[in-house]
Image (tube, rainbow, N blue to C red):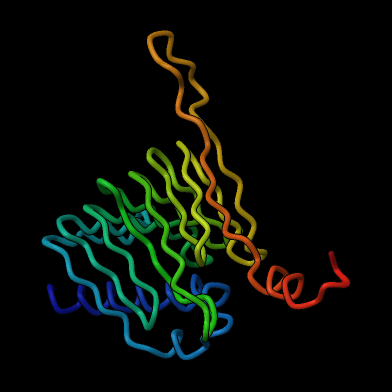
Length: 187
């Protein structure tokens, strides 16, 4: 019985990552062919509800994709995996979007990944590090396919303190700066 459940869990997770990672690993197609490694303290799979819940130091790795959280819940329906919810303090998602790029890191107390929409929502103490640029806020929506970031401060004003705001650190484009310095005609 336990072996059958484990086979179902592995099959479900393989299906999830095959569906969930095509856009994440467009530049690294080898990620999709890598084995999925999952570690957690407990695993609960309910085929009737389509929920799989992993608790306790959850770590999911497939190729360059890495997810670490206190709890991960996978939602599935008759069409496959629809959503993944990772909870932590904070939860951490990372991927290598392209060869010769740096790893993109995403943090939040809650990370929701919407498979069909190919987007991630980072909630509460959200942070996205993309190359040398850093985005922080109470919520960040990241469109993986288009590489579009929307960041939001606290939507609930707090009368006793200044509500959290969005903070961005955007590095200058080094290619344009060096061209200006080397070519006096551009001045």
